[in-house]
Length: 329
Image (cartoon, rainbow, N blue to C red):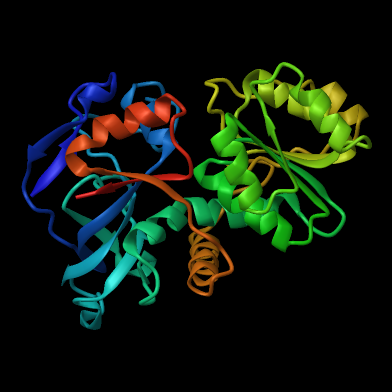
């Protein structure tokens, strides 16, 4: 089969198309003929060598084939897997890697049969991002009366959170994005307002929209943007970190956090605690069901051929993408 292989950490050019042996499903596993694979931002950081030794998503060594989110047709089943799944369209996550390929292995217990009305590209747009968006709304406790500020609101996760925050009863949803096209998209997804975070006065624009302060910040950018967003929180608000696309996490002064009564649950770890597989599978099922029923609009902003994986990574790194970026083998 053809697959993308990384043999050295570095730039997008390290994503090279090679012919490699077909994977074989083991006990309780499925072999999926990949129709679509979702690209996660963190994969661009791993490819660059920035997370080696500091993140569980980084491979123990090279060579490495990225990719966890896949959807396609079950071609073979391992021992202990339901043979009735043969020929079914499913979506699921690989154990750790291997998705940027024509064939991938997925645990049968983590595979979700897809309804006829949901495409493979839409499904992978919801596997990680839909689960994360559902989890963020739950972690932040978004509900009636909240004013929510969402960073990277035109991104793969942000686009889902904009929709789910409104559905959860938030009084106002304010999205941060970059450029007129992305701002228009954020409004189209249901945000009450969209603000360009490249404007020098963007915090003042948010203050004008929410003079009393926002009650929830969902921090995907970190760095200076995250720090500025923190200052917009009302006393007793919630500041939930789920990314650092700027390359730096948001530095918070514990004394200031305590003095203002801010709650800081982190989506990726303490004090939220571990998210068990059952909880994550439930969140994925909820996102897929919401999409199939028309309650959640998957946002596939752009797709690339498997051979053009390097171009996909370049576009993501250049902030030239909206929503989910998908590879189509």
